Image (cartoon, rainbow, N blue to C red):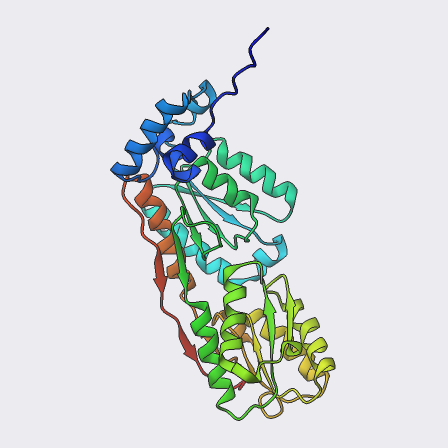
Length: 336
């Protein structure tokens, strides 16, 4: 009788045997990024134990440097162009990457097809590392980066991505603080225009809003949209007013959303801040383009891009990269 054919050992088998992530195994195999001496020893022992053999294609991934870093934005093309926050992160990233004599390559993911193409591009060895903005909780591009072990950094902290360093702000605390400030103006029926609940930023801002309201939180007064967009604010504000005509306060998950909400409030004959107090988040250009100017949370978008780029360059230099949390502040203007 012919004996059954033995299945070839994979990176998954090595990771399971060594008790580490696939990304950590990939970093050892590809010679890219920091891995502790203990983890490296366990991985090397596991390779011998399971009989893992790298094929030619995998060996070729341990390539010469491209001197390029990818900047991956998981947003619709139009929002990428309109969102000044993304632009500031991009400029900060490029500043540090250029200073290190690397080229920044911008990759916009607007569809599943884009995600597959960009994932293949990143696996193909065309960049040495990547900065990811707006990664979702279920994100094929992020999965590809973790699996391949590409030196990378997230702007934000998507769930289940502990093996990739990140730069973030404390969205939950910032949202709670600005909501408390809004409540302190005497508002009684306060709603939220939530966005991007499939990302840590959106989910954390909603949680902070809920914490500020405590027992007064009413889930009916939360309208959500997948995007931090002006149109989300226009449509969401109309729905919120239809649900609660007595609404007198609103926390919008971003300044773009708040600007859209202003348009609907004017169309409904509601004065801001006299009838409805409105606050946003980001302190982006939307905040001072709006009339009245928006009370908001300032997050250091350009600094976040700089910090993310440094994390990638640290890994390319063989150094350990540590997560970074940057401070925010409330900027109080005339809208609340």
